[in-house]
Image (cartoon, rainbow, N blue to C red; front, side):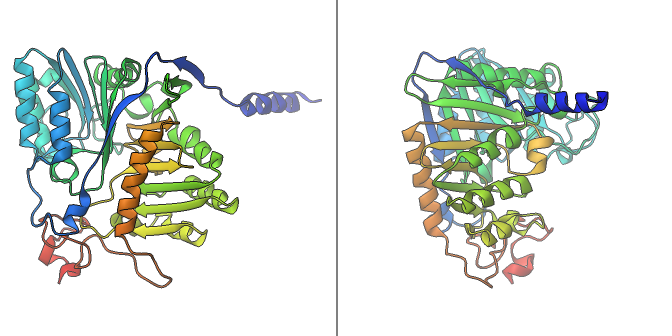
Length: 413
């Protein structure tokens, strides 16, 4: 056998060996509270008009959560917008002697200047005024120059024990006014708090973002005394789609229900089509803006047999969640896109064998699913800003990001 052939065989064997996940036993039950925004209040008329600074049920829960802080609070958040109560709470928590640190996303400009136009959410610039410049690290990458990746996390670790994460940004649309469909989970687990603290430290203390971060979180599966298991993937280093999402889809035998803002990843689409080919029922709720993206995979999934419904609420389907075989749940900050898994700073959690989490997740999915009409061949998908999209023509927002708001938009005329 030639030397080249020998090297080829050795490489094939090495890279064909499946990776193994180490089990870490946790000496407690999986203790959590799951929250879902009441986006349908904007559809049935209980809520209406411009979306502004408010404090709805999820915001109230988050406020109660952060006000339990005793010593430390580390936040990795995309930004802050029109949530004055949150900024006021941070000031009060600081007065109590709690150390608060944050990392946020910055889209352009010069590092350290804190110009509102350089942030997706303008009120993010209030954080260094409250916490101090050295307590807030904006992501512009190792060179502190604008980059194409984003720090898209929405997690908070408190007192080395408590964790808050999910799809909910600290903004009026996502949290306060509950205009977007979102979820959030509060978890009491020192073990998971440490996992997220390690990720935060890479970004805050070492200013390592995106591909500069070190992998390792997904190598462990945390097993709780009630049978719940949790595996955490951080983007991009833990390759959440390759190592987490697609393998979970390939395991499915009965059903997959997905609620997603953007789904453009062809590998996921292919895996879902494989699942349907072996008899798995796939349902997808996707955002109208996400469906309008030229790379959206929802049409390919329809063609492959999936039931797909595009939201028409006015607000967004902003969740990044899937439920598998009435048994396991994926949730977090990552959209199912190439950027989400390969470039951005994100977190994805795979939680298995927790009936309560599944029950609450399925109840919310069914509630949203039942509000949307079935798609028929030849029917156009709803537009993000139009007369048929709930409150979208009266919310004061540019829902389709075309520079036109409400009555100015062609869809609202």
